[in-house]
Length: 53
Image 1: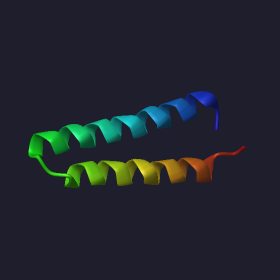
Image 2 (image 1 turned 180 degrees about the vertical axis):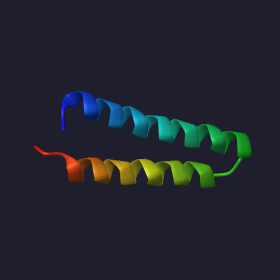
Image 3 (image 1 turned 45 degrees about the vertical axis):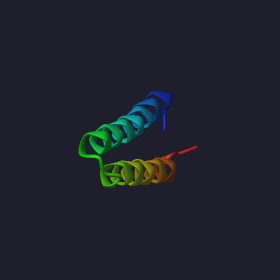
């Protein structure tokens, strides 16, 4: 994977975590935070699986 693709995936994972954190604060629940972290981590695993290095 090229460095630009890696950058975009990393930014997407960070955005998902931030979104989950904001929703968790608004709803006063840890469930959105947990979902955001899980989705971002699954994205990280998939990112590593498709990396051609």
